[in-house]
Image (cartoon, rainbow, N blue to C red; front, side, top):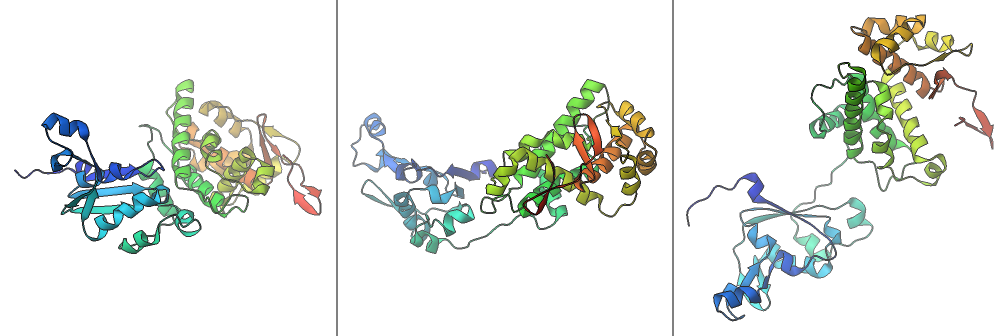
Amino acid sequence: APLVWLTPEDRYVEKLATPDVTVADLIGELDPIKAARRGEGLADLEAVHYGLIPRANRGVFAVNELPDLPARVQVALFNVLEEGDVQVRGFPLRLPLDVWLVFSANPEDYTARGRIVTPLKDRIDAEIRTHYPRSLEAGMRITRAEARLPEGVRIPDFVARAVERVAFLARRDPRVDPASGVSQRLAIALLEQVAAGAEARALSQGEAPLARPRDVYGGLSAITGKLELEYEGELVGAEALARELIARAFAEEWGERPGLEAVAAWFEEGRVLELPDAAEAAWARVREVEPLFALTAPHAATAAEGAAWAEFALEALVGRGLLRRAEAGYRKAPPPEVADGRETLPP
């Protein structure tokens, strides 16, 4: 047979393990229709219809969620991994398979549940345990590489970093189930929602798309749908917890930058500040608040950038519990209530 170049797409075959997967799907089966068309009996080798693994020869065959594969199908993989021979309805076929088998599983599936049969685990050459990104920068690189963002949307660095911090904070929060964890998909989906929200807002206002902290709140569904909550988290509610995580993320991102005290003092007399969607109108409102304008003006090359930085400062104050964010705007946060000897913030 002539030599044929296999592209990466041709070399990679993937199968999601489900309880209804059979040995015939992976190894092969006798095909009576094929035998009848060839005029052969079922005892002829030409009647064999090969499964995914033989067809993945000289390639990579991946099984996702291996613990969900029925035990009898896992047993059928023994000889493929060790000897390279298979049996199809009594046919002892020795197939010189040149295939790399890769399996994936969630940690709780193969440690707590133990649904991978032991002889199969013994035949797997190496086990690689992955982990969540250990640094914010590593997480951001993964998120940027995987997120599908619309062209032309600018996302300030502090917004992108706050998005990543939401995932990091959720992983550390005791109200989130640590067994289920918080995957990197949360940050990826949230960044995509932020970019989409910024684009939609820019189109409605006739502006160049620039993400602002308010766009992160527009991606609440990307957070709430990916959190498995403990009992304490259920009491708070997924949306309230997501809002808290966003505010805390901006507070962490602000860090030790100075100037927030003067902004917080402006709200002491019961003042309320509402920033519109339109960047020019929002920046005009910021200019009326002297400490906030003084704090953000050095970063405001444009009105949109100034509005984004102003929201950044205000969200940092919300995350520190000094301001409250509502539909009517930002205002001074009420004092914490005391319940059962513990301080609790009002809803």
